[in-house]
Length: 403
Ligand code: SF4
Image (cartoon, rainbow, N blue to C red; front, side, top):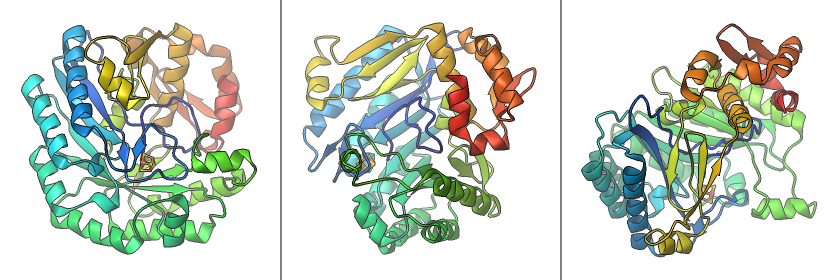
């Protein structure tokens, strides 16, 4: 499961993606909201997101602190409501559903939701119950994301996941029995020893379940994760680059021939089932996030919350110590918008980006863009910059050419 925003261009990686965007203030004060729930049953071995594994502690205090942060945003930035809400983490489904219900009620009571396009919730299979999902549906959940990651029980065990594929199938039945059609299944490729046959089997099994959205991420090993520490000692390595590219190509081929349209480097959907929250992000909208370690960006200012649940709870009432702010230079913002925007396969609408942020990407990257275009990595028109097929295949080269 994802923590929040990263702006790196790790190929096929799970880019963060959990964040909020808010529209240019001149348009409205309706913004996108990302909520970080930092609790997980155990830490997956590749994960270094800010989470608290084990029995959830101080949950009521934590949710109370997030409500305070919401009110702080309302007062200090005059936010009137939200266009999307994304509950991520961590594992939102791991805490008592009552806490989540109360938080959604609080948002209803204090903000306008007339512009709300999506209310998405991330889950892990072991937490899914009929009662939990029914209650979230009653509170307005419109999209569900479920982390499978791999089909093979041996891999699930190796990477520290807490369910078997048999249990996963049962949970998908609950989802479907409740009539939920807007759900996503996450897969990861590139584990140590992962082979193409296993990857094909994972894709086949997931496609057979017919979700309307599938995400496929290249393994990203966090430095201070279990695998990251092993890697530092030479005891773990992701599969090599060529194998990684082969798996990515296989995912594109199989999903494409099964009716899924690739709309982002790692994301595929049936028509009409794209993630609205993520689309807003890739399109360069500003975003805010609440909760420990949450990140946001508003009017060229990045806000990063402390990576400590205790400090977040302790300081939110009486000081500004729960966050840091960094004023982004035009160059930093331009680079971020370019890298994030290129993930969107329809490309970057340069005119729109200029209107939103006052940044002319053509001017900022003129020579570099020309070189990448000449090398067949980017397609550039009067209004759009996008990856070519070659650029999609050689994403590292694209990043290198733009640095
Ligand atoms: S479910 Fe696993 S990958 Fe997701 S946040 Fe929790 S520990 Fe990290």
